[in-house]
Image 1 (cartoon, rainbow, N blue to C red):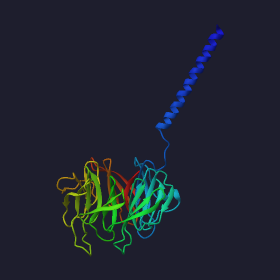
Image 2 (cartoon, helix red, strand yellow; image 1 turned 135 degrees about the vertical axis):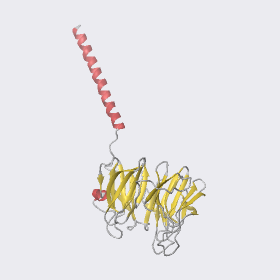
Image 3 (tube, rainbow, N blue to C red; image 1 turned 90 degrees about the horizontal axis):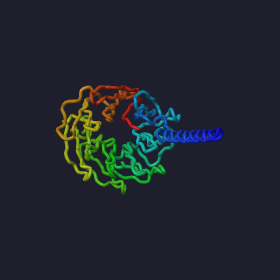
Image 4 (spheres, helix red, strand yellow; image 1 turned 60 degrees about the vertical axis):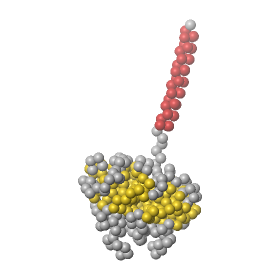
Length: 361
């Protein structure tokens, strides 16, 4: 009787321990699934593009973590022991990689977007590259070409499996920033070393220039809102020696037909820039002031209190406004972050030389 009970107790204890071990293993597996390993030091936060001094020296990247508690300058150089080159113009992100466009060096540096470890570079087939859009395994890069030739500007098509330029698409002078809308890429033809007044539509299904649309001179920024593309043109500045000063303009374009729906003109001496979208309203900078607009009524005449400044870059995200002050264009700049619900400044963060954009990781 005693031996039978003892054996039963041992059996029950063994069964309990086995079940406990299974639960522990399942818990570990679930924890592993729910909490993936960090992908790199720069996974959670954003980068600041710093152009660097023009003509000499190198541009750089600044990293800021999501909570604004950690700031690191010269990220790429810290990781790789080498500089990016002159001038760092922009950066595009794929699922895993960062493509850093270095304008004066005529190259694109490729790095892991989470660790910033250099993976390679693209240095053939580019000529003064500016901005990059990624879609369907290909990259489209705007190139200004030679400053002495207004007819050699193009969009380079890059196969991201081989990192080689496989095609070029000729466009008019000064292709700059781009927006991806379906299978179309809209290119702002800012003018490069001259002045242009078009956007060009690239059809990515056959990599051809589908059409161009005339609008205000020097289109400098674009936003998609409510199935419409809003293009902000700065207008010809007063210091132009080739064309008379002209007004800035906002043009609303239907994204299905790519036809102009409406236009709003500024005064002749008003040259706005940095069109942004906070999820509800459009914002832009004009003469050191920030204006907020609903995208339909007349342009506002009263600026937002507390947001003003002569910025070199500006963007909105998650009810925050990120503004970049290049200061004297020779020493470190400043990122100022404002909470748009109250227009209060909540952060001031040092950057590298000539910060021009924030890239959210």
